[in-house]
Amino acid sequence: MTVEAYAAQRAGTTLERWEYDPPPLGPFEAEIAVTHCGLCHSDVHIIRGDWGESFPVVPGHEVIGEVVAVGSAADSALVGQRVGVGWQAGACLACEYCLRGEENLCPMARQSCAGGHFGGFARRFRADSRFCHPIPLSMSSADAAPLLCAGITVYAPLKRYARAGHWRVGVVGIGGLGHLAIKFARAMGAEVTAFTTSAGKMDEVKALGAHHVVVTGEASALRRARSSLDFLLVTVNAALDWFSYAKTLRPNGVMCFVGAAENAVNIPVGAILSKQWVVTGGSIGGRADMRDMLAFAALHQITAQTETLPMTSINTAVQRLIANDVRYRFVLTWEGA
Image 1 (cartoon, rainbow, N blue to C red):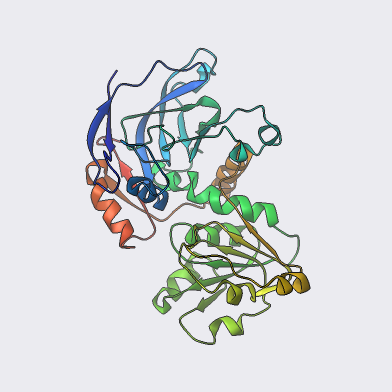
Image 2 (cartoon, rainbow, N blue to C red):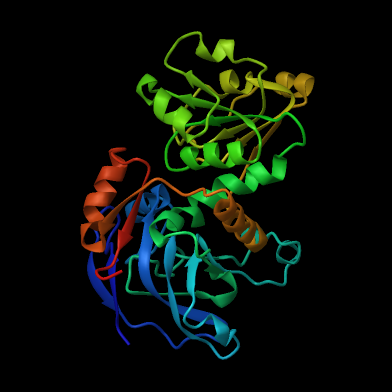
């Protein structure tokens, strides 16, 4: 069987139609007929070769489609189901991290569109069947696709650090990750403060669920927000003055990075000691986190704000994403999906 896909043949080139012949289906693998695939900034890094990829690469790691075949050891009941696969397409399921339900930390983790594995901008996609997650019936595939990466990326740390009672959450950056973080934090019962550089987004951000909006272009804005938050989720990849943002935390506050910030996190150790701050990071969650996130999103009707384009417009979507010309995620669809 030959698979039609969109691939970058060399680092930094546009994606072009390409075909490849996959190996025989592995014992635990599932083959998915792709209908939808979200576009993420990580795909841009992969296309550019920023992370040391071997080319050609087929990006795409917010994959939704129907299972059409499974390997000999996989659950045959998956065939015919609509499922989604995020950044992670497999793990050893035997190491200490996997046994704790932290499969995302597995040293043998298999990425959906890196490390020589071809991703979801293709007619067919393969993953370990145990990492294929059923999509709730109430969700459209276009709305659900970005949840498989952007959604789990913000949900997992929010869940991990959630506090009972009055919980004050800040979200830095209102884009593909940040707009979902606001929705999840609000649904978790938090008092949500959004940090944005754009005053023009204020009404839009409040409509997403933020109680307060801090426009960081105003010189005194961060100063007025000092000591107001229990948890600060940083979703941007920009180089910012992180100590000024850390000062928005109350004692015992947590600052968590989920965006690939471009500069070092220079926060004085003395401030961390005196306030008992935690500075940490978060990637995707484990399989249980993914199931919890999808169920929580379905219950609270949380979906990504998306713009759909045909797969033939993939290069247009990539260029518009680089130019920040989308509210807030692109989802690519195959004809007839």
